[in-house]
Image (cartoon, rainbow, N blue to C red; front, side, top):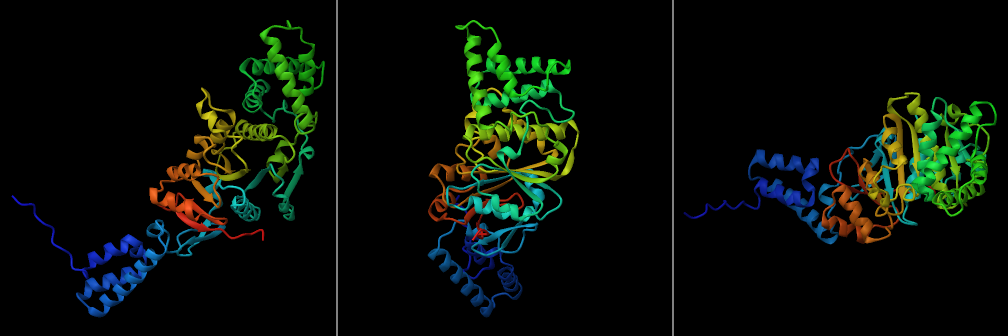
Length: 433
């Protein structure tokens, strides 16, 4: 029996015309849809057919002259609502708005030096600080966001303006639990092995017990260092090596963050948490910047957790530029979940949102990439690998990945928004010029 052949469609058949339109995304325009509907209703109307053919030929010519694998799925009608205006989609210039509440599901911004990452982040911050419904907490590694001091409701602190104690606990938080978490954080960012971590916890707990008995002030890292120096340990033992490593790390901590994490001052956590602020960490080695950021986030989320301050809406937004040193991809291959990633996962139910920004996605923990609902790849990218990793994370086709490698330039972004089914391109205005 011969295979039954499908009847050939007439070039002017509405279905054939729709197939041509779908190939270039023209079918999604309401004006074109009305013409097709009218053609179906009127039959073979030569005038309507001519109008449709002219529109199709023009669109096909544009698509051939400017190949764009995003064109067929890019937004064509206003479909985004929210408080934050972040630019216009291309090629159809649809205004792109995002609600601040969407940041409770986290956002990721990837972009190389000079590509527009800081510009996009600044555009977000300028609009977020106008809102009264949430508090912005910014960690500025490179002294890029001091211009935000123009907002009266924003405090920009130098590192020594924040005076705290690494060992101090927020109200209602158990000292033993807190110290164990801090020891893990120090282990994650200052390369201390498990025995050294245990030694830090043990000595800190011993000093705290003396404080409870009233025989000494509340301990600081300086006190822990002194106690370690006075410990009698055989010089050639493993304990001695771990002690020396721990002392050297505490020496560096006291050198780089003498007031921020080693003072006897107490932080007013309620006042500190319920405010907009940025902390300038420039001039400090990257590992100690990361340690400081991790400790502060840990204390804030532990405080919210202990006070059982669960909420549905976004209240505390943490902005983490240069996030890769905090969430390294190498952490994905350890046998435990890093403390900071645990806090990020927990924070969402306590009204915490995060914006993670990084120059490269290839070095960023897969846990962070997978758990960000809104993703941006903007401007210059460090390598083709970044484009491939981003493309795989947001579902780009092979043609779309290759297109991005050719056309991305400062101020042009690829966006995946959970409210829209397909990734699209975006022109981001320069709010800093």
